[in-house]
Length: 340
Image 1 (tube, rainbow, N blue to C red):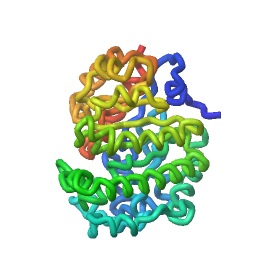
Image 2: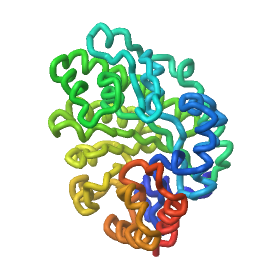
Image 3: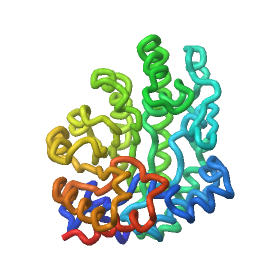
Image 4: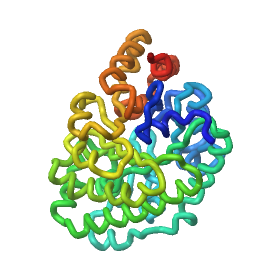
């Protein structure tokens, strides 16, 4: 039995004494303990070494004390397992030296054997569960098929992903073939994560907001929904689409257990658009953690009042920034725990 099950109870739509709290990217760059490991080991070494991934996952549980842990990994382990070469360059982010631009390249991408290609992630899950010792639940995650597709086709990060969008519109058969392969791989991957011990799953659609509402349905949501449907009987699934407020209506009718909201959508609008029943997660602007601590605490309490304490998980509206003082991250979590 998990000692602090507040997060799981909120996902179950149960009445809670206060909402649970965790932060996207909480296992990461704002912590000096994380930076010490980053200076010793390159990125994919940290992802692929279960002992390092587990240690990084548990660091914020010891230091910041949120109500859930999220496994340290990366969304790009999935395309790497599918035969797409990914490099991480300092200050540039992910680079795919041979981006996918033709049907011939799409045909070379394969749905892998998960244990053979991503077994190290399952080992990290098992080791993390041991280290957590049932203190808090563990969240596993994956990128949405559209978000993975964006990197695979664009070849790097982008402000608009015009090349990825252009590939969808000029070569839709190839685009849908690739999106389906990513979806099939992601389903297999997340099912293994649940078997290994993850208590819930989050799907990150970081670039969904780049699409129009009509194109979002065709190139992103229908693939995310396949994943939700495949996992809903086995675990709780949270869908977070950055900039995707326009899709909250469809998302709210799905079998997802919760929907992440970014800071550009108010609590009132998010409740209205999603149908008012589903658990919502979010949506503190990560930059706001640079505010003085008393203001952070005041704003967190106001945010909880706006969303309501039930059917709600306190989080940021995107990942925590590397320049956030640890005391400010702690204050964010403490504000939730102090909520009456």
